[in-house]
Structures are given as C-alpha cells and as structure tokens.
Image: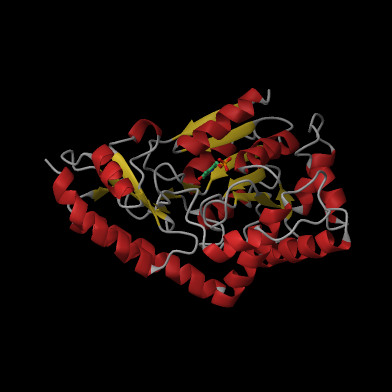
Length: 358
Ligand SMILES: *Cc1c(COP(=O)(O)O)cnc(C)c1O
C-alpha cells in the first residue's frame, strides 16, 4: 500500500514531481541538458544568494559531505556534533584519513556560536563541519550567529550541511560567507532521493585547487570546470534534475517568503499539537527545527504500535532515530506539505493515540 510519508526523509513527493521525473530521456552532452542544467543551477543560486551557479551531484548528501572535507581540509577539521548526522560526518572525515577533532554536545542541544569560537580560537583548524538542522533530534542551530563568529576565522573553511533546511528557511551563503552549503533533495525540496546540490565559495574553490588527494567523483575543481559548460563531471541523474527544475519553478511561484512562512506555521502548529497531547519537545527551548518536530515519548505510549496502526491506515510515521529510537518520535513538516496535511495527521493520531497509551 502507498503510504503518505510523514517521516523526515525521504518525504512525500507530489504527483506532478513524479510526472516530471518520467520525462523522456536525452543525452547529457547536449544543448537540451545544458539549458536544463543552467536553469536549475541558477535557480539554486538565486535561492541561496550564491556567488555562482550551484553544483549538482548525482549522489546522496553524504557524497558531498565526504567530498567537502576531502577538498577543503589541508590541516585539521573541527567537527561539531549534536546528533547522528553530525557525528557520522566526523566519522566519515576520519575514514578519509583526515585529521579531525570532535566537538560534541548532548543530543537535543544546539551548536552555539560560543562553542565554535572557543574551538577555533587556538588556530589549530583550517576547516569546520556543521549540520544546520540535525534531523535526528529536530534541533536547528543558530546559523546566522555562528556565521558571524566564522567571519573572524577566514582561514577556516565553513562547511555546512543544510540537508533538511535548505529552501525551508532563509539561507544567504554570500552574507553568511559559507564556503560549502549542501543538501540532498529528498528532504526539504520534496523530491525522491539521489541528487545533492552544493554551493561553493570562490575562496573555497581556490583552496580546493591546492588540496592533494581530492579524488575524482567529488572533486570540486572538476565540478567548476564542467559547470562552465553547464554540465557535470560524470553522467547526472537527468530525471531528478528535470524534476528539481520543475520544483524550483513552483518554489518561486509560491514565493520564498510565503514558503518560509508556511514552514513556520506548520512547525508552530505541530509543536503546539505535540504539547497538547501531553508530550514534551526533545530540543532545548528556542532551538526547535522549522522542518520537523522531535517529541519525547511520555513513557506510556507504545510508539512501535502507533507506527504500525498508522501504517495500516496508509501513513508512514517515525519512531525516533538512533540512540533515541522509541524514546522520541519525529513529525516532518517540509517539502510540499501544508497545514491541511498536518491537520489530517493530527486527526489520525488523535484517533490512534488512545489505543496505544497504557
Ligand atoms: C538525511 C540527512 C543526511 C544524509 O543524507 P543522505 O542523502 O542519506 O546522504 C545528512 N545530514 C542530514 C542533516 C540529514 O537530514
């Protein structure tokens, strides 16, 4: 049975996006592809206020996360972690044979500008990795404030995972001087998985040129060379890029301010609903994500059973990630969802909750 996805990725994909994916194929070394590439890369540039058209990578987000550290760490990386994805990024960095130190805070807490400042103050690092919106915990770290601190460390490459926040909240890579801002499209963009997008600053590209051992598939210099011809180093996932072009058109028709406001409204309504049901919010107050809500179980709700009952009714629910599985649950409110979708879910859960609470 087809389930409506309220899990935080992959998210529900609308019928028109799926249809766009079914567009007949064309070669990627053609004018047709170059036109499509330009439209998508420039659309993303506008979305992020980037210096140059945004790069398109046929991979999931982790490909670019690995690529970013391979291109930009020459000395040592400061890995900031407050959840599963940020911690895994540190492990990936180490697996690449790159020197890195982990600066971890408890799950549920944000990465603060103070922590970033104190970690970088010693001058040990030439790059840092940050996950803006920790999808495992529903915590959104204060990117603007962290960006202000980073301006005092121009020698430290500022690498940011915005996988579950890009397009849902304002991100200005030029004003915030972000060196790499990356996302996979199966979260806030509302597309099927398999494509990652990433904006790279000029200073980061010049640095990448001098970094040995960048490999090929995620070599930023290769991406830059090919982007000049509106192309990619290797065969791109044309169907998805086509669908992203379609989705970007819809995003600009909705209007960015309206889109950000829609996410804010869904986030506030979901938090209020969670509290009204007697649950508490997992993130530290003031740092709840705009794209998903992570709630703590009240200890008397069988979350596995809730997930099963919801599945029987055609809804995919999440019951927590990693070490907080079944202690928490997450409700996604990103992509093309509206308040109507959220109300539909709340109504279903209000019906099912009495059956799973002891
Ligand atoms: C989903 C997610 C990832 C992993 O993305 P893949 O597309 O599976 O590689 C990384 N970071 C964050 C914050 C995520 O939400």
